[in-house]
Image (cartoon, rainbow, N blue to C red; front, side, top):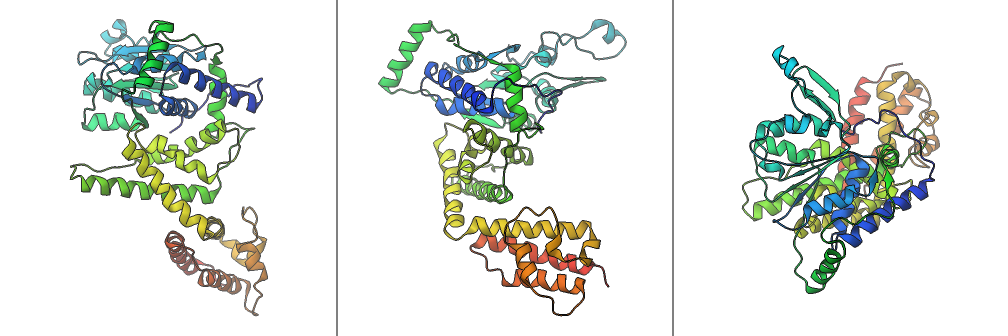
Length: 434
């Protein structure tokens, strides 16, 4: 879920100027953190969508420096930093317990200076924390609220970057991993040229972060976040229905591919994409369009969803997602698939109106309002003349005829058509009589 901006800030910048500002920030971090472009891009996606990023690598790969350099690009923020350990309790993250309240049997944290009161957080070696503490973090990371005993408090936390040298798999850590929907493997690069560039940067700043020439006020990040998460009343980035459906086709194909790969490797696990992560993909699509200075999502943007569904830096996972996209994109593009999707999804809108407003059966269907499609279903219905039957009978006949005459371009469209045939059959069974 996306947390709600309590008060959407205004921006004195134009949308294009704001986009340029984020691009310059990404480029600056990229010049400092050599050969980490994909991980940096993923981190900015996490910031724009208000989500969290998990960095995994062996010791000494620069995870902490990377997180610090990214956070340094923002102004008017508090940053919470902690090195996780087995001995820590939730008060390490939420603030010390109020002793007077504890005497009364109430768990109340003094949250000043804690993760609750910070816009950004960096948790190093997160899986060194015990399961009790990790479980306590779940609500804070997802619902943006401190929920402990009778204490409920909205949290300011926007994005947490966590780092780990290893993955520890338990029921609790699986839930934590689902909160960090952006994941990256930061691999050490042994190429001599890359190492030379890293050495030059290290010598220039003596291992410290590079001071940014300009910073992005946190209010401007919130402004961009409101646009990307579809909360801004004035700015909208459009995802057309056929692209949303296509996105889900690609995700399903990728999930199937990953599980087939695991079976071939005889791995004792399965690959699962949670509904939470799948829903968040829409925010990522808007973030991708935003950083391109567009207010409409394009089909090609869906390939970039690898940043949320694959572990960046693991080539096998990235390539599997790219292949799923390429396979379905070719199928849709070669046979007017997107146009057919748009048509059938317009038909879905008609069925939904009839389902929830049965009185509409009594009027010509081409007069229905609010169907966002072109010369497809409604035009076809309008051109189909009545054969002397009642209005309800005519409407039923043209809906059935439309699906009967519709020839799917590929298997995915055929599957959708079959769903609609079944939905129409049920709808006709419940339709009013004259």
